[in-house]
Image 1: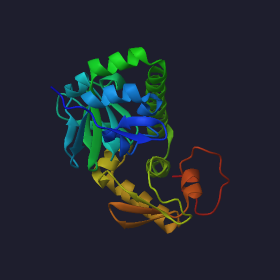
Image 2: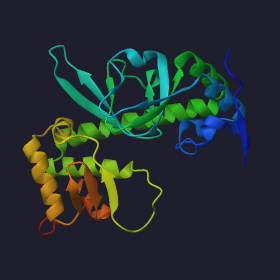
Image 3: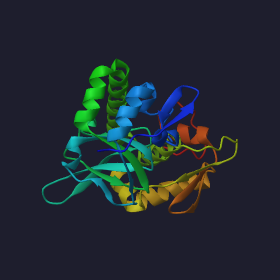
Length: 255
C-alpha cells in the first residue's frame, strides 16, 4: 500500500508536497490541473535524476511512460541499422517526452544532469480523459514540437553554416531558465560537445568551431571554454540566425 501523500497549503489550497518544489510547476503541463487531479498524478509519478550522457530511455523503452522534463537538456536520436546515429531534436524543461510525444524508435539521452517526473501512460491517459484542459495542453505542446521540427528542417536544408550555428545557440538562449533577470550578458551551458553539435547541425567540427569563433570576434558571444557561453547581444544573435530580415553590414555572418 502506498503511503498517504502529504499535502501543503499555498494560495490555491492543498497541493501535494512533492509538487511544491517542482521547477516547472507554473509553466509545465501540470499547471492546468486542479489540486485533486495533481494529487492523483503525484501518487503514481516517479522522479528520476539522470546523469549527463546516460540514457533516459533507450529506443522503445519510453513507450509505456509520459514524462515532464523538470531540468536539464535531453537529446532525441535516431539510429540506423549500421550504427550511424543522428540527433534529431533537443528538449528543454517543461517539455513532455515519452510515448504521447511519439518517437518510440528514438533514444533519449541526458546531455546535462537531468531531472524528470515520469508517469505510467495508463494513469496519465485516465487523468487526460477527465481533464479537457490537460488534453488541450498536451496537444498544444506536441504541436509546438512539430513546429520546431519543421523549423529545424528548414535550418538544415536552407540555412548557411553561420546561420545554423547561430540558430543552435539562439535555441539555447530561448530555452534558458534562470532566476537572474538582469540586463547583463546571459550565461549559457552548452549541452552538446563540438562533435555532437556538428552532427546535429550537419556540419564538420572544424566549421562549427570556425563559425563560433566568428561570432566571438563579432562581439555577439564569448566563451569561457567549450562548455560555457556568454551571450553579449541577444538581438544580434537573433539577427545572425537568418530568421528575420537584416540590413547588410560589414562583418555580417552570412556564409
